[in-house]
Image (cartoon, rainbow, N blue to C red; front, side, top):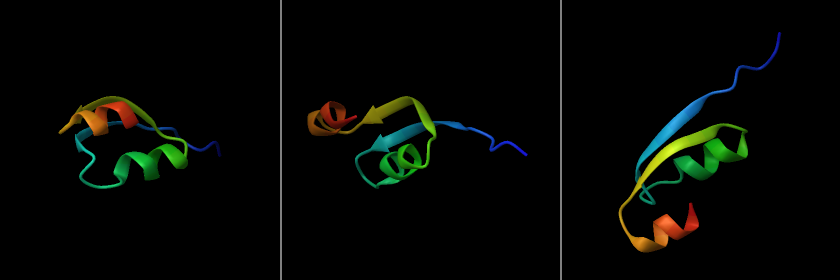
Length: 43
């Protein structure tokens, strides 16, 4: 059985590490909402 791929939105990006974790396992972010400029630059 093939592994199912998921897409996700990252609300309040930069507060946790969900974006990094999901990206490392092969998932794709389709939208993010950063809380500061550093977060926007890093994503």
